[in-house]
Image (cartoon, rainbow, N blue to C red; front, side):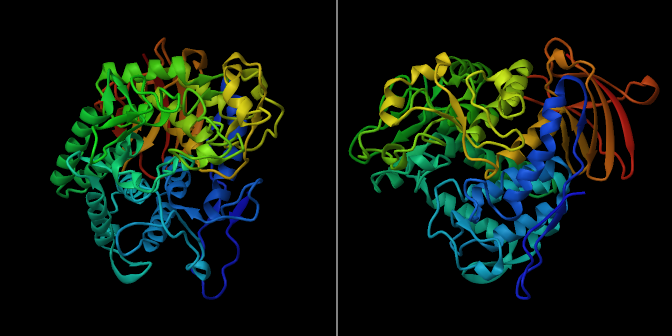
Length: 538
């Protein structure tokens, strides 16, 4: 068994977590190419977790707070490995600043603890809180809230004090009178750091607001599961949702950004009614508003349809409906997006991490066929059968982006329509270095196979097209094993029946869902159980 271990710690270092390659789902039938990719996704995800490196950034890197709280954490939770998630969270919270914020990145090993970013984007403070909430839901480990952990530059305190300071910092960063968190140094898209420092206080990223809402809702749910008071978290979430609808949704479409200057009326940026630099649609806030249930069913369907019409290429979802214009490096609104001469990664606007979240949105809406297609666009095995304009690429690693092979940024802007037409080649971008592999593995387990663990329940919610009828999977989760036989119906979503040994029908309860039939919930299997299930869906 392949074992990936962080470099040997010196005597003054904490022992690094040691993880063997996890037992991965075994899939049959039409899912075999994806199944062949699963061990490599796990390999890439563990490299990113234990010693961030990639084949294009081989000198190494720090733990990006945003990244490590997504891919590694989501993969480990999907597989039911709670202990290493606890370890991950204690390391992240021990790197927190005394004011409640985190650096953009920090070094994993104690000997390098002073090597860390000097600031962070406006979304960073939310990721450790969201990761903590997800862990608490999966484990029920209320004792973690009382564990004493150091701050980077202050005396140790219980984790609940770390949490309190982070929430207080978020409150201080709200735009006065708007109920929305300010942009700060940027958001998820590292290419869109504000060119004018004054925008940090008056600009709002709609995507960061969706993350704020997700963090509050997930923390509230975790607190309620633990029997703790979540009243204030629920109230704050309701206020954020109302402000989101009031300030950031116009004509049924979510804007990318909103500007609230002191001396002028508010203005939307990147919206069909208010195009910014020629851009009309922004993928991240549109899809995350759906994922975090901030929209009505009609609004959610409108975002999905607009993405389908305006933001799709042959290789999947794109960040905007066009790249930002390039004028020789002059910056007017955003830094790297307007100054970088390289047309790839976020600049090239097909970033695979965002594409995977779009796939997750399709699963959330129950669009099984589109979800399956999007999942298969994200891995390189036989990719040219699915994306004819893709260039040959290494088949056993995850690519962080799909980069249209234009000669320069001027050509990319002038002839961007060639991407949709399939007449420009698409190169694989950076390899291995990304949180994407862990996210993708989590989607296979949590959305395609539809298996999600809670402290005392197993949720079963496959989103699987009828073309995969008959698929069999053997999945090891935590300390039990599932042997599954899937029989999806025409819709490919909404469990209608669960059959156990000897074909006996198993009772289940259905969880609520705002946009479709919700997950089936059964009691979490006992340790050592091998549970055979036939899963039928609508």
